[in-house]
Image 1: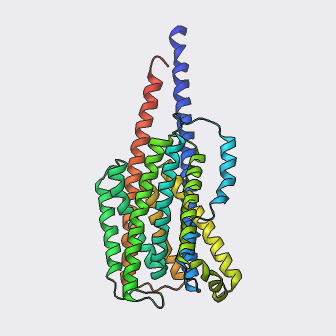
Image 2: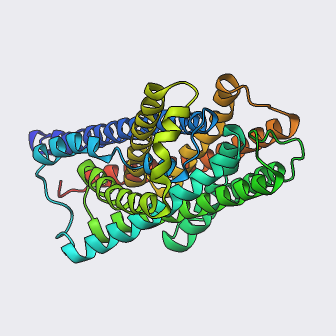
Image 3: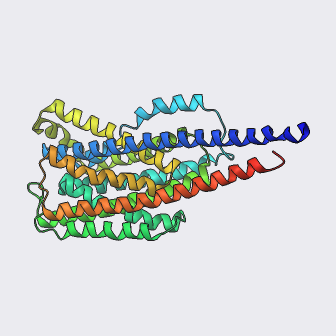
Length: 367
């Protein structure tokens, strides 16, 4: 009997140990997810509202509005250097060549600069609430790009989210009672909608390309990699935008713009400064969620922020919330809920498979 009872604790020990380790890893994973969600929600909402404030109070430089979206990237060097020095664990495979990484960062950075310009033009011609609801279509675009680039499953719930978010944007596009900013003609309003849609499509493509880069090129499991991509691509985007600012001649109008800013020079500087900081906080959340979950999930959370922003815009800027806009916002929430539920089902399936794998390992006589 003693001989038969000996192995029992040995088999139970690894089982308990494996389950404990798995729970700790899941807890750490969820903490990272929640932290990045917080960064994205707060950063994006603040950045959109401050961007609209810049235009409302006398700012009119689209290049300046584009520049502040990436110019604050040096603040990310502090957490990057800290994480890089405290985490010396190697990646899953040998790092890619410097030439390959530089090429990826350059291309992505240029695309980010173009995407930021499209967003700036859209926000110039649209109210903060309309702009946010139009940009919520990025989830639909990302579902398509994720299907072709990242081989993401296209389930009925995801298809439902794509369709109803497209309806949401269509409602705003044909809304005759739209609350246009002062001085914006119907033609400029349509231009704002089209540029916001184009920016959403390009942004979704960028997220899918970032996920592909993490999976196929970088192949590392550290958050410093997330910051590294954000810093290098933001540096390229900032350089491209600075060139555009000087080439367009808009740099000559900055002094006059500052003098004519309704709330004063100090407010002008602080508006641009905090807009830049908010965009970097948002970007860390976006890239972080791409890294720890997927590009599609990152876009879902971004869509939630864009659906919530109209409420904040109503409070801050007193935007008009007519019936069409309310319906569009409710549809956007419906689309978000559809994909969130799909992500919950996927996570539940992963947990069941992991539990089954741990049980099989525990019951293996060799353990």
